[in-house]
Amino acid sequence: MNLNDYQAQAASFANHDMDVEKAISVWALGLCGESGETADHIKKWIGHGHELDLEKVEKELGDVLWYVSMLAQSLGIPLQNVAEQNI
Image 1 (spheres, rainbow, N blue to C red):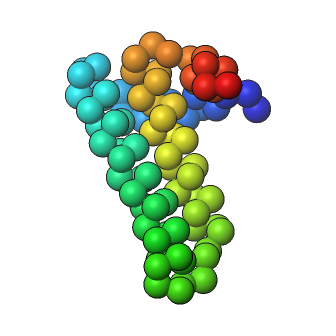
Image 2: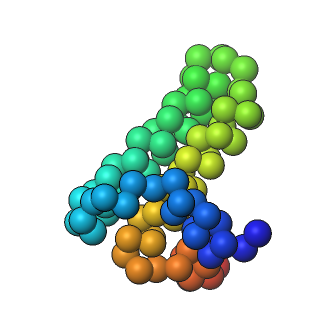
């Protein structure tokens, strides 16, 4: 699957009843929340000696990717472009 295909499929799970400004806000805040959850798993592993649950980290990273994808889409940016610009 390429990133633009992912973006299109991910969008099928999004709430499309929001105006663009609200959607951008919701996706950006969701990205912050999911990034925080990812960081919390790492913090508990490093700082509290918990075992690192890679399945949970993978799930949270998937949530981060979904929100990045939806935010990019709301801004009219193909996810593939995001990846290519980063490289």
